[in-house]
Image (cartoon, rainbow, N blue to C red; front, side):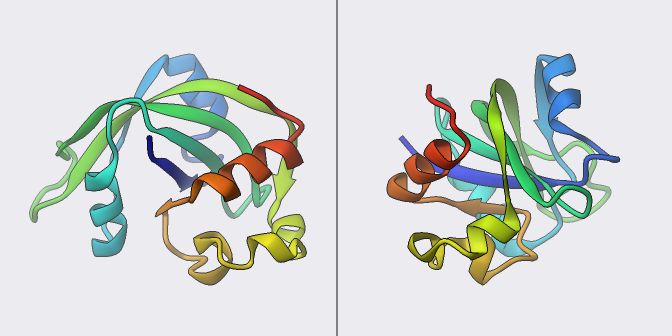
Length: 137
């Protein structure tokens, strides 16, 4: 099983929007590294949902329901989308400030490559973030 983190501005598409939608298409990614990560997602992988710009915190967990397929919003180029389903809201959101202050998370891509919108998360970091969010699956 793979673990990932996706970032979205809550004013554009929030975790609540994903919950309301049921299964949402994760589209609009226009960065080559993020595209590579989208294409690495498999059905059943778990995804941390991070609110960027406003909040700056991990707020929930989603699951990959459909692996990468051509992004229908792309007017040109070879871009991909995946389908995600909201699984569980964090009991306590985990802020970027807290993440950056946690020594065990210094290798997390969110800390090292902050602008990337889709990134892998290793299993140990995923479990620690769940614990910090007072959330279990």
